[in-house]
Amino acid sequence: MQTSSLGIYQQSIDQQRILVLGKNRTRIAQIILFVLKYNNRKYSVSTPVVEKLEDSPIIIIEPGDTNTLLDYQHHILIFSELPVADKLLYTTLADKTPKSGSIIYDEADPVSSEIAKKQRPDVAVSGYSALKSELQQNKVVLISSTNEKYTTHLGIEDQKNLGAVKDIAKKIGISSGQFYRAIAAFQ
Image 1: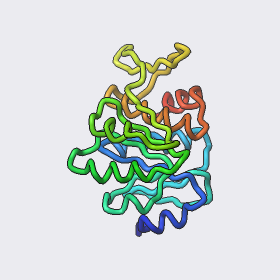
Image 2: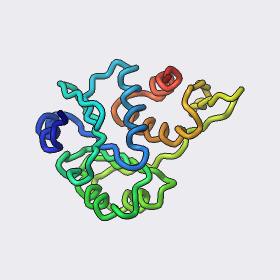
Image 3: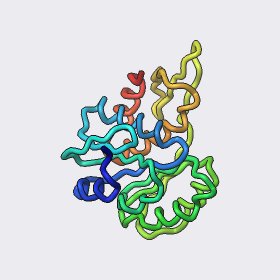
C-alpha cells in the first residue's frame, strides 16, 4: 500500500525532497534512480510503482496524484513538458519552493519555462536540454564537456531527459564523470 503524500513528507522530513513532474517524470525518475544506485548512493523513493522509504539523505518523488503536490514540501522541482491545463497548480507549487531550493525545467517547454523563470527570492533556476551526442553505428554516443565519449544504450528520445538527470546529479554531489559512467552502463 502506498503511503499518502503527507505520510511521505512526515517520513522524509530530514531528507532533501526531489519532486519530478510532467510528461517525462517516470523516465527521468527511473534514470535518476539508476544513477544513484550505480554510484552507491543511499536514497529513498516514492513512485506509483515502487516505494522504498529509509534513512538516506534524499528522496526521489514521482507522484501519481497531482491533487496532493503541495503536501510533499519539496526542496527541488524538476519540470518536464507540463500540461497547460495545470499551469496554475504548477505555478503555485513553484512559488512554494523554499529559499535555497531549486527548479530545474525543460527549456523547450513553454509552460515549464514561463513558470520557472518567474522571479523567486533565493531559488536557483536552471534549464535543461538534450545532451551533446552523436550517432555512431546506430548507437548514441554522449560527448562530455571535456569531449570524452560515452556510448549508451539509451536512445535519442532520452537525450533531453538525460539533461535533467545530469543537472540533478550535479546538485546532489554526483560528478560529471560519475554521471556519464553510470549512463554508459544503463541497460
